[in-house]
Length: 195
Image (tube, rainbow, N blue to C red; front, side, top):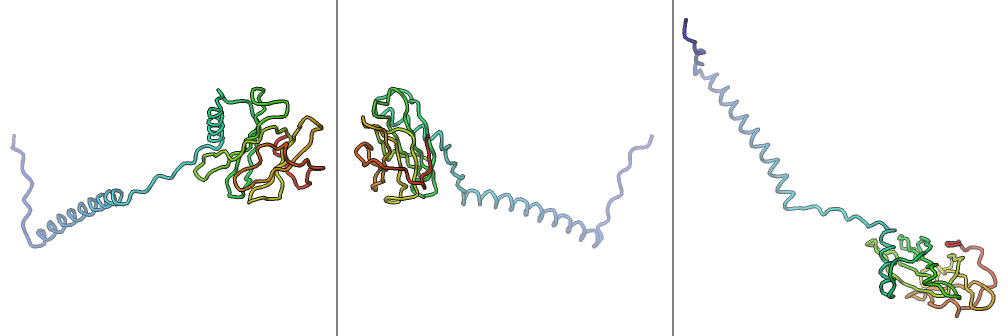
């Protein structure tokens, strides 16, 4: 049996040396380029972190949280029964929410509380009005006071049921609608929000 033979040695001719040197150089350059790109991407991410886009909370969840906070501040327990309407009352591009608390624990013979929450830019809701003694129907008009739509609410102050217009005064709507003048008829431009 013959011992295995080794491959023939490559003769170190100038052409072979040039080809080997070119191959080694190309490999080193390729490796350096790959490491540079990975390092540049990593260092760029470290130097210029991109803030994660802020997710706005779900409006319904945020509004219910605002209602729960209101109920707790009033000494109540649990979220009462309510009806809601969503409308951009102040034309800021964010819907506000009206909540009529028609829960027996919150209502009186004169009506129920109407809560108006302003939709904030961060997705939260801020209470701007608690108007007691209100009844449905509740509507919004095209007329504005201090930049907010006027509201028409039903009332019953012990006499005949009627409707009154609530005008925003820069801070909120009136807290007792029964002190406002009764309307003879609802404006034709009114949009019913709660029936």
